[in-house]
Image (cartoon, rainbow over all chains, first blue to last red; front, side, top):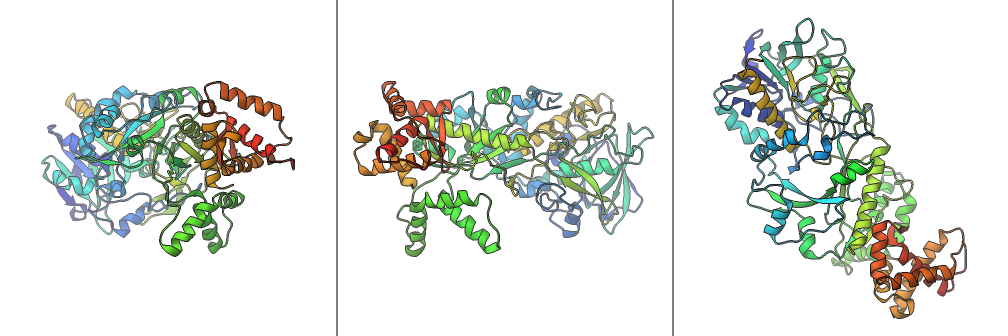
Length: 529
Length: 106
């Protein structure tokens, strides 16, 4: 059933066995899984309605205090389906190496291993509507599609599958199932203002909920799941400070820290390729399947990540939109129009003068409609994992929203590790392309003074703000996603990821939600919750 | 130097292994252009004999193409205005520049 919370009587108390806060991929998956043959009464609270409403979306606003980031009320969406409503749909799995500790990254070891999550990926596949026939078996699909894999040095790179979801808009796609589940109620326009606890802050006793210009009410359940995304989950924990002034789960000052995203340089290098089409066709565009798409992606190998101080990374071999010299010309012209000089000006000038044939070709193309030098360039995109950094964080600011709740600010930071990962990944790719005789490469990432651009491409993946850890000293939740020191408060979503991996998070978010739902069902069945 | 210098010049070198055998003025000119850029970034002119010896060794051990690939695999690469070329190719190009009369500004 789906109801509008604005019709609930002011001061009412809603009862459930399990209450989930947040109707995005994490919350909807958990709700549907929990409702399946469990007999449990599930309540899902969603702040928005079934489409974008400005006044609700405005609750997401907050300042960027560190590096440039998307405005926080644009980086995520606050209505049923959550941020899946602007998801691009790319699905990859975390890697075994992601769960292992790295001695040069404090607190990087997860309290679980890859084997703990692996079985749930199979169950997650239908939720994101990707093809389910050996979804991530690279060799199987290459054979089936009649191509040939590139034989990278396996100590450096490996070929992995990126599956494409339609993408699944979780609100639209699952609205009917949510409506029809007899033991599941969705309340729209229900904004959770506070998680209330007992005097020791070990047990959640209820949620304080309010509607915009509407009633206020409470929710009581046996257990609670926060699934509001990496920024808002931390905000609610920090706002719930009646018993512990620092906020729930935050006795060790861990909530909100380790904020990470995936960042990318698009493209990182230009390649005039001599790659046989039988191989290239798998990499430079997705291949449509009956369900979704297959896209060969080149990623850091587990061996590389175990032997070097480097973050995970992946290359997508897209065609370049323009040759390097044409791009430099455009960048200089664009900057001149706006009255500033682009970074690496001398490099761009050199680039134009060393690419006069392409620049001339493009100019001729503008005049005649045909570029006499028209040719294919590859411009691989490089996306990397950001290394967990406690100083990269979200935190409450003094500004408040319409409910009088303090807003969240994002102090996003990168470190030397990210610069190194970009450069080393590019260096290795250049070497491998040369070793294989696959073409000449031009890049500016290997300059000695290279720095990641101020405005860098981001995945808008909020990761790590309530990370999983063995102890509360290094994180917020345990291996079962239960908040350390609390008996009945759980967190779903990428907030719990201890490290970020190179993989996009949505598919893993769904897998983790299924795992959490199984755990909660078992706990309720055995009377432990 | 333009893209064609790099695209056409170096593969021809890799195939033929010598400037003379590379055959066309265009290839030799391309290599010399690249060589000049490399030499301009050095603090002293390289020893011509040493460059020749490196090239000869590369030709002996499995051919130039293999040497170039081996350079890339081992990370023996240099950057010329953003282009990444192998050490063996760099030797060829510097030799070509010296043969073409490059004398200085190093």
